[in-house]
Image (tube, rainbow, N blue to C red):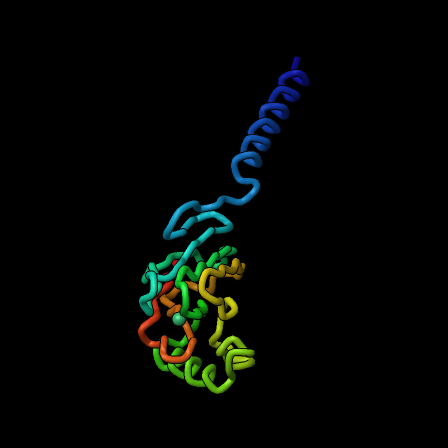
Length: 162
Ligand SMILES: [Cu+2]
């Protein structure tokens, strides 16, 4: 009798563990626009405001340490654009844009080995898109910019990491 009860307790315990595993497993994906999630991953889509030198979103969100899958769609017919996440605020972003100009199109208008470049797409022609994955940095506010010549500082927004 006693051993039966013990077995029952073990079985109930196992069941609870399985339920927990089923709920927690697989990582959660935040669907839709802004893209913040408390889970292990987030999906973000960002585009361009037509032919304007502007992203279609100026604020994005993520959670620290989260794996972010970001798709950048350049919907412009003629303009090239990239999407670059930077740390260090305005002065760092300005330096990246300026050094990127020197680096040229072949380098995606990005300086080599600049630690303030946290994530980036290639320079995309009009109509092209690219999906990148990166780990969201520690909590804070980060700028995302386009470094195609003349587009910074018009083309920028902020990613808030919580
Ligand atoms: Cu641009």
